[in-house]
Image (cartoon, rainbow, N blue to C red; front, side, top):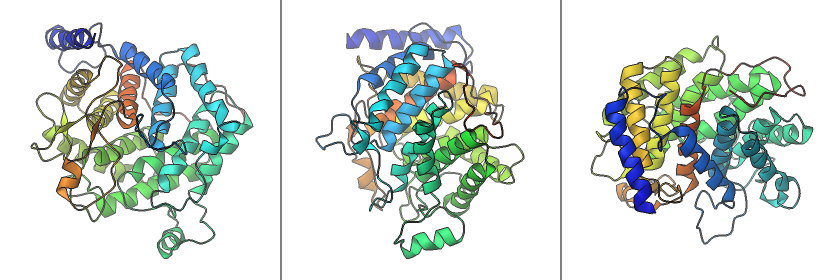
Length: 400
């Protein structure tokens, strides 16, 4: 079975090279179409229990719905809406309902005593996404608790947390590259359901702070200020974060030019480091490190969004996006689980720390990013139109 699927996918890649233009990101051969692949991935996600920080086979007890689950959930909801699959969407919403009752203990706690507190709060993006179509107060209240909480200090903040808050940044600011999805996605969702620009403005201002502090001259980002390595998935969070911010923020935002500049610089460098086969490496600028799939999917997504919105050259980046997506298909096993996904990784000033990370199969860091790619390739990723006073009056159609 595994060989059969792989053979079909490899045939699709070969046929694609001759049948379509190399930059075509609309038409794909049967067996590799993003609508087909995405549906398989989302169905698999629905069958998968909540993970331990993305690892679906971890020996550790699941104590909360972490950010990898959130990312897979968001991508699945987007995919169902983009493809107009009402049944799929309803089942994704039904999966959330126990979190109000029998599984309420899996809601991430507020003000956890953890260095990665930002990873807890992004959970709020899921109920806010659901609220856009199902305007029930329970979704709004739960999501906004986390969105507002990113700017409400704990009772006993550290000096660092107090310092950031006094400058009107989130007390969760760490200057870790990962934060630029965790903070900005939740604040963007809050903006969409309330129409209040304070949410998107403070997210954009936070992103500019990170750009000014940690973007390197070549456009890439170290995992953290103290770790001089361009770790693939770390940079993936920033690539996706900037693409989403540019897609979702108002065109007249004072922060837009700075983010556009940083996004283009990063995309140019990523293009240079993409392997001939479409993949990127665990350490982006080191071809001796292994080829990693979650980062490849994230960079591919950032390219797709850029091409579809006209920010990136259609032929140059369209070809890179198509090549990345098709190569990723060869890493899917017979269960539609992505192989070669780097395990969850903290920052460390040690090359071997990154090079020797476990390569997981089916980890939600990779599954989520693949679903994002399928969603973006399946339909519209144009700027989201926000209506003032949207809160309490939402019933969006199941199409993008």
